Amino acid sequence: MMSPARIAVRALAAGALGLLLAGSAVSVGARGPVLDASPPPAGRPCALRAKPGVAMSEGFPDQSQHGPDGEFAPSTGRVRALTLLIDFPDAEAPYSAAERYGEFFPAVRQWYARASYGKLDYRSTPVLRWIRMPRPFSSYGIDRGYGWDAHTSMMRDLLKVADQDIDFSGYDLVNVLVTPNAGPPSDEAVLSVTWTGASAATTDDGAHLDKVSLIYGHDQSGSRVLSHENGHDFGLPDLYAADDFARTDLLAGQWDTMSLDWGLQGDMLAWHKWRLGWLTDRQIACVADRRQATYRLTPIEVPGGRKAVIIPDGISRAYVLEVREPAGNDADACRQGVLAYRVRTDVDSGSGPVTVTDAHPLTSACDFSSGAFNSLNDAPFGVGESWSDRAAGLSFTVLSHSAAGAWDIHVTRR
Image (cartoon, rainbow, N blue to C red; front, side, top):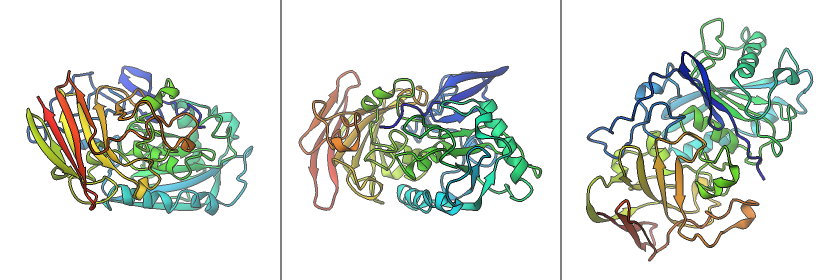
């Protein structure tokens, strides 16, 4: 079982850096005063805006936050990753750099190609040799939830031994694959982490190490641990419960790689795909007013068609309906049907910004997939099943599932 571990911090500018527990993503970008979220654009009423001051808010960020000078990497088009491999005087690599690199590539590139419907062209440029760090691993103080000082120390030492030989310019993010024998095994403490938003070190030619994913140990999720960490580079939060890991099974379960990247479901939620630009507005049915209507959805694992029904509830909450099936990145999915969940833009990464509604709360499924996180594996609603939230004035019924794979859902908003 995975350690309840991807703990990290987010530093907010307020005269001095204050630390806030956030999850496996660490964003140290400077922020202005904490304000309420502004309403979504008039033409996109379901595209809830990111809430300032919230760690990796689930809302749509300002576009200036993505790109070379932004807090996050671009998530469409060609994205260039520089991938380095490091070991230490007290933790020498036990096998070749090419073997370590092969644990993640081409799998991560292929995973993103499927998840994005080809809209993200992930290009990794590896330096296929072990870069020996100048100090022992034990000297950096790397443990679960390690802080900015340890990270900057490691990145500055990395440049001392790599900057002269490696051109860091022109890359959207940097992956650092650490020799797996540095630190404890991943089933004891998960150290993998992503840092965004501020430069931990600057090369001689002015390139900034400000979007860096570091992978430690041999995580049971295999290559998907890097897909998860790179998701933070693109601005996505942790969906598992950072402070109470056992509660993850009551949040998003195994339905997004930003939740349990070692679970059955390897794809991302439709909300994330829309935020990242992989789904268009035309593929989203936005129910922003009172109505009754029937919508036809196609599974998110395959390209084309309408992918989600979204019902906003104020400026910081929305309900999302989408269809999941065993295909693509979800080839091992345990159930097919309509997945319903609530998104909150005012909840920090690692504190439950997404909560899946369990259509079958008294049962679990595919219990072999995890020792203790299986209750949401059978969460999707099947044909004839219904759900309602009286307080929100929302209800839906799954009407049919065609042989071609389309699902019809009748939605009522009062």
